[in-house]
Image (cartoon, rainbow, N blue to C red; front, top):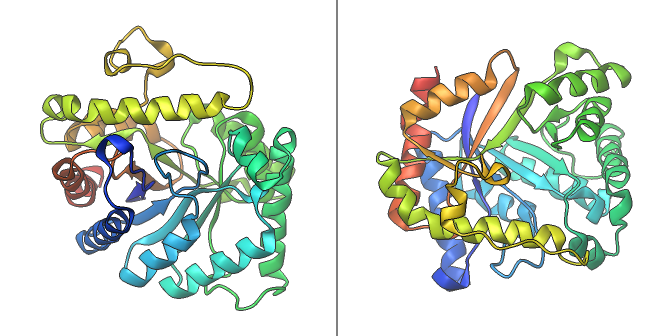
Length: 320
């Protein structure tokens, strides 16, 4: 089980930096995290976000691969139903080659109608399209139908699904489940059996809604505006184009213990408290990767640096 960091490259208007500087700084943070011993550096895909949410994670992953030496290079997630599987198989192979065989390819269905409209893809059949294109990527590698091939044969592939249907899809495909959940693990194992795969091959990983700080209470007040931006952008994005609406939340709403729909969006913890939480969460599950937010929507640099240091240096010994 390794510990890594996810970068989404958000650059909100309230805290905006010149884009070239923002990308350069993120590359520096990835390089620093690799030198500190990060187990993984992960990137994710969205389109049409006003804050510039990373739209091409494999492109950025290739740049990070060239700047690092040890960390796994992962996606959590790429949206295969939006892309030609040949293109993804080739791009992923190149990241694996540039990284020296460190790619972890996470793939998921997504949830935003405008993104599917942008690419001319069928939102109503996104799960079927996702499963079909994952199968095709695996086939292209297995049958050596694209060149050059990745170093790993094949690179580890993960399904980023949160419900029973997706968990069974990941199982049927024989790939890892990018979700740590005791409730979903049973559906995943059922899918493995259905697809003719050994249930003992099961493996799970996940992005945890946690950042680390030496003083969580002080950090909370500084992170809260950034978290409110992040949460509201996800909520608004989930209903955009559907004719439905969802109210904006404040930082106070996010801390309301009675607000059932906002629990678990983010916890700011000390490494010691995080280790206790993680041991409970992962008990009896075959966990490979734990992924933490590197930053929440442009949060202050000193908190980002502290979070990366604690995730990469302080937390792993506590988990061991």
